[in-house]
Length: 269
Image (cartoon, rainbow, N blue to C red; front, side, top):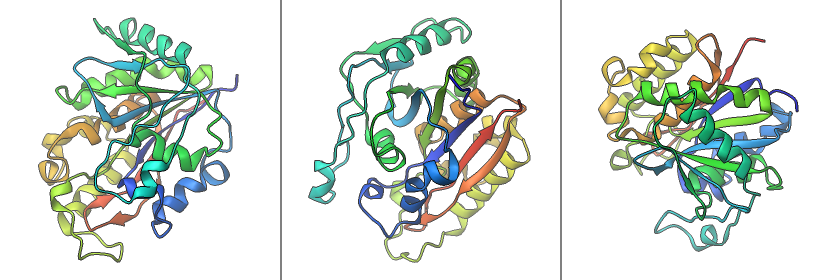
């Protein structure tokens, strides 16, 4: 199986990404196999901000159900389905790596859970055929950036096994600060400052600063009052390795404070 030489952090924004053709980010995700990654992976490991557990947990199911874990949105969104095959062997391999190389004492398996919207909404646009096996891995919001970076480091061998590793979260995520008066794709200053700090830190290879983001970043607590939407970035970054080269592959805004900034991390051959 061909090696997958890149990992990705994708900002999945609002659940309306699933139906709103006016969103720039929707067009970005739909162009995935044409413009970003033409190579078809053997399977996908996606780390979603919307699965937050005490210990790392993988879903090991034959076929993924579609979890509509959002409320008060248009009815058509609740009819959408993305029933990609499960990746049981990948889940067990993740568990093996995290408990071995990663030194984790406990990694759980969930034999019922499907894909939450942090996983299926972007994947539905990127791989609409739903024919690639998908395994989901949880985050631990009680831990820190370095913990999740090290989790990613332990998962790095999966790239040699044809696995596409995706962290799905959000470059900024403060739902209490959404500005419904801003509809033109512009951003408020505090959100832009954080987003630019993240971009510059990644592109300049200052990965330790990104791990220590709560101390280093401007407006850290405003951009991420809770850290679960940021930690998928650290996993993807750790899996790419300290000498990986970051590239911003998309940026756009929704409601003034929700950044869709997304990144690839390419490991030197």
